[in-house]
Image (cartoon, rainbow, N blue to C red; front, side, top):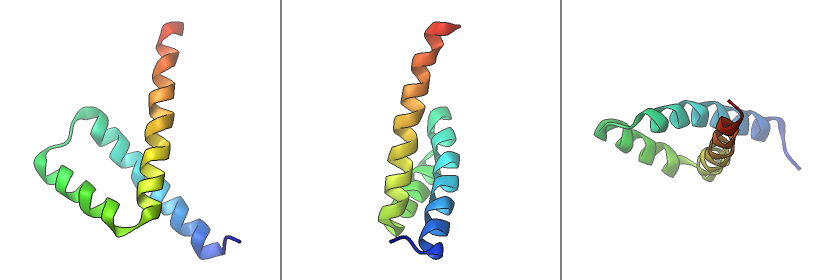
Length: 67
């Protein structure tokens, strides 16, 4: 069962993951790559959030055919 703090943690991870996805999309500089690696090591929740949003981001690119 998820506690309130678990849900807050996941929400915070998703919020930061969305920032990282936008940075990855534009290209990371070496300092950002290091910060991303450190953030991912902090919590399994961070990695799950990043990969979940990365999958969504990739799927959204398929919408380009409707332009």
